Every structure is written in structure tokens, then in C-alpha cells.
Image (cartoon, rainbow, N blue to C red; front, top):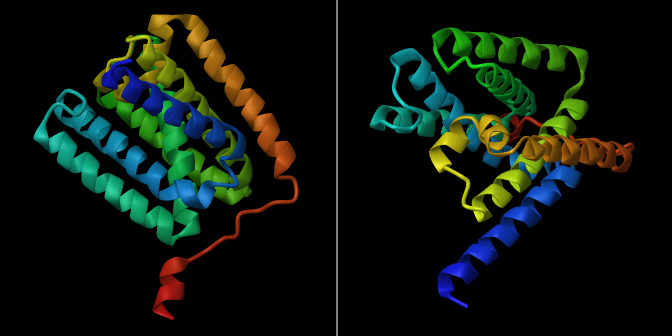
Length: 217
């Protein structure tokens, strides 16, 4: 057994385990996942924005990396400090990814108009979630889908069918292009995870927080 095979097996096992935990316990782990979600989502959104506004490739230039990194830091910090910001970021980035992914599937590249539509939907969706007090349901749905995507992407990586840059830009299209069954698997896992989380968190609510105010006091 080569060292590279062992390293790959260990990494894949950890990725599958973590993704499975997120699928079935994402809401309970919400406070732990917040900075990670905020940072990754910020990098993706920042790089997408540079791509849409300036025509650069996704994470193909120094500018896109710098913008993505700083947006990621801002999102991670806001998620950690403020409950309302955490909910807005999770809701908004989930809606953005979904809309951008669907538009990509119908043949629309991430040009300015596509980016603008996804951004508008993301802002409206995040506002609607907060106003309607649907934070718990959206967090459960978003974490279940994120975990399911992690499982599918891990298998694609093991099969050698994964291009990191393309996957980060549009994971839904990558899975569909490889085999539509991957998307079926992703949606199926997410649905099972949503049902499990709804059942196990009936009497559990993540406590709202304002860590900045607590620190200031």
C-alpha cells in the first residue's frame, strides 16, 4: 500500500465522515460550522463577483483570490459575532449558489446578468427568511444540501472525475455532467438529512447571540 493511497483514503474517510455529520446534525453544529461556512462562502462569492464584473476566470487571477479571501474573512467574522448576520449569510449564499447553479445548468455562464439575478435573489431570500422567522428550517435545508454535496464531491474525487477549480465554480454542473445519478444521490441524501434533522431538533433551538455586544460589556 503506497503512502499516496493511504493519504487519499484517510482524507476521503475524513471528508465523508464530516459531510455525513453535517447532513444529519448540521443545525446542532451550526455555531461550530458558522466561521467555516462564512469563509468558504465568502471566497466563492467574492471570486464569482470578480469573474462576473471583470470577466476573469474563477479564482484564476490574484485579484479574485484577494477579493475572495477578504470577503471570506468578513463573512466568517460577521457569522461568529452576530446571529442575524450568520442567518443572512447562510440563507443568502445558499440561495445564490442554487440560483447560479440552475442558471448554469440551462446554459447561462456566470456573466454579469446571471450574477446580478443570483445576487438579487440571495438578498431577497435572506431578508425573507429573517422576517418570516424561518431561520431554523433554512439552516437545516442548507446544511443537509451542503453535506450531501460534500459526499458526492468526495466520491467524484476518488474516481478521478473532479476538477477543483471547476467544482468550486459550479459543483452542480460538475456532478450532472459526470452522471445525472450523482445529482439524484445528492438530492436524496439531502432529503433524508432534512427529515432526520427536523425529527431530532423538534425541541432544540440554537441560542441567538451578539458576541460583539457581550465582549464590549
